[in-house]
Image (tube, rainbow, N blue to C red; front, side):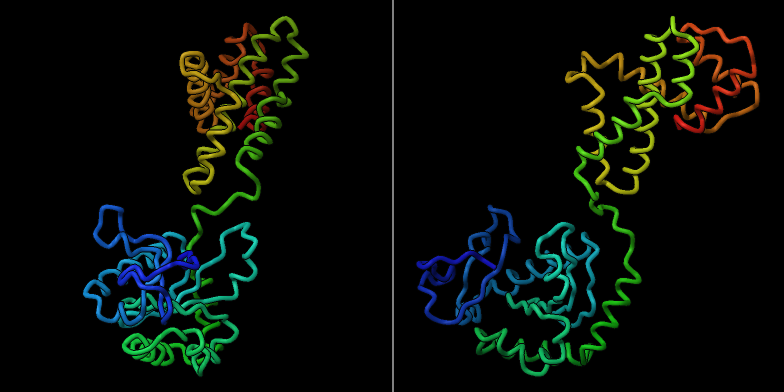
Length: 322
C-alpha cells in the first residue's frame, strides 16, 4: 500500500482524501512513462471510475503481480475473467512469515482492488466479510467487486475447498532454484574454506609426514587441489540453485589475491587442478589411474617407484579430496 501522509492528495484530481480512495504499492511503469506519476499514490474511487487510463494502469499492476507469482513459485489457486486468487509464500527468515502464511489474496485486473483474506476464514469472507474489507468501494468499483466475488464463490465455495487447492498446489510445486541458505553465504564459504582448504586431507598428511623435505611444495599444491575440489562442488550446486553464486564468490575472495594481476598464476593453477580432478573422477584405463598419482607426486619432487604406494595415494585422494 502507498505511504500516506496527513496532507496526501489524490494523484488524479489533487484534492484531499476526504472521500473513499484506493491506492497501489510500488511502480508498474518506468519513470519516463506517462502513468508513472500515478504509481504508489492514493486515487479517489470516483476519480478512478471515469479515468480513461484506469484499465491500462490497473492491468499493469495485475500482470506485475502474476509475474511475481511465477518468479517466486507462488500458488495461483484459481483464476477467472479479470481476477485471480493466490497464495504468496512468506520470504525465508521474515519476521512476519508465520502470520503471512495464513493469508491468501484475491486481485482484480481492471481496478486496484486486492482482498487479503485469512485462509481459515474464507467462507466468512465470501459470505459477508469482503464488504468490510472493501469498505471504500462504491459505484462501479463496488459492482465490479460483487461480480468478482460471485465468480470466485463458484470456483472456491468454502474454506475446505480452499485448503484442498492449497494442498494440491504444494504437492505440485517445483523445487525452488533460488531457495535461501540456512546461513549467510560468507559464513558457509568460511566454513568450507576452513574445513576443506586450510586443513590437509589425510592423504596429504601422510605425504607431509613421509617426505618432510618436500613440505613447502606439497603444501602449496595440496592447498590448490583442495580449493579446486571445493570449487567444483560449489559450481555444481550453483547450477541447481543460484544462491550458491554468492558462496562461490566468497570462497574465491578467501583464496585469491585481491587483484587479477596478483592472482593470474594461481588462477591458472586452480584451473589445471580442476582439469586433473576431472580426470581422477572419470578415469580411463588402469595405467592412467596410476599415472595420475605418479604425476601428482612427481610435480612436488617426489619420485615414487612403488606402484602400490601410488595406487594407495590415488585411492586415498579419490575418497577424500574429491
